[in-house]
Image (cartoon, rainbow, N blue to C red):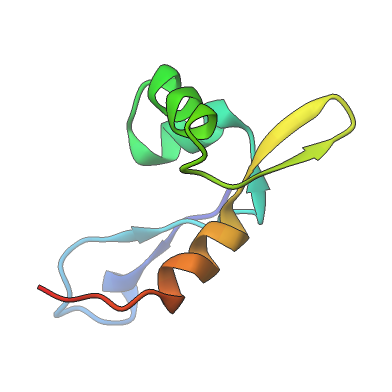
Amino acid sequence: MTDFTLNEHFPTFPQLAVHAVPPVVSRERFADLLGLPPGVIVGWINKGMLPTVTIGKYSLVNVELLRKSCLEREFTL
């Protein structure tokens, strides 16, 4: 996976790395992306807090549906 560093093009931004995330990922990969234990992700899935899609024998986190859901919600401080 290639990292794109914003500082290469925008030197005034703090050091950030942007990673491309596929539309669906395994529970383990999703946990890794969030920096949480996989058991937390499994718990969220079991409670219906994360959308999943089953492909064959694999149940994957539907990152694209989660992203869309988050963008549609109104955010207030």
